[in-house]
Image (cartoon, rainbow, N blue to C red; front, side, top):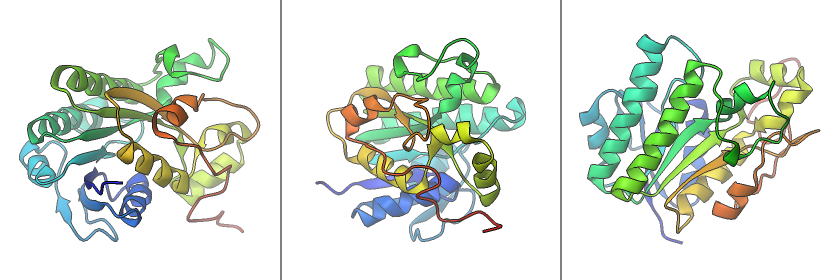
Length: 250
C-alpha cells in the first residue's frame, strides 16, 4: 500500500483528533491545519479556512486532503457558517485543484437527511437525495456539490462523507445514552479512524458520497452498504464502544 502525504484540516477538532492518529499509525505522513495546534502532530500549520494563501502553503507537498475544518453544527449563517463552511470549502477545493492532489475527502453530515424524518421511513439511502432542515445542512450539500463539480470538471478524486452523530464529549455521550433512538446513528472515534483511513487508501474513485456511522443498535437508520462497496468500510463498534471517554458519573 502506498504511503500518502495527507493534509488534515480541522486537525484540532474532535474528529481530527480521532482521524489523524489513525492515518499516522498506518504509516502515512500527516500535516495538520487549524486555528490552534493539534496534539500529536509535529507538522502543524496555524491558519484560517478563509485564508487562501495559508491553505495553499499548508497543501504544498501534500497529495491528499482530509477536510474536516468547519463549523460543526447550525449557527449564525453570515458570521460563522458562510466563512467556514462556504468560503472555506471553495478555498480548499480550488487549492486542491491547483496543487493537483490525488484525493480530496470532504466532511458532510447525516444532517442533510433531517427533513426526511417526518416524510419517509428509514433507512435513508444516498440515492434518496437530501432534505436539510437548517442552514448547516445546506452548507454540507454545497460541499458535496463543490466536490462533484471539481471532480467532473477538473479530474479530482473526491469522496464526500455523510458523518453520523460523532460523540465529542461526555455530555454528548450522556445525551445519546438518554436517547436510544439516537444510538442508531452513532459514529465512534475508532470507527472514524478506520473509515477515513479506508477513504484515503481506496483506489479507482472519481466522485462519490458515502455514509459513515457505526453499527446500529435497534434499527437501521442509514444504509452503509455504499461505503462497504466503495472503500471496504465495515463498522466494528456499537454504542458506546470505541470512545476515548466514559460517562462522567461512572
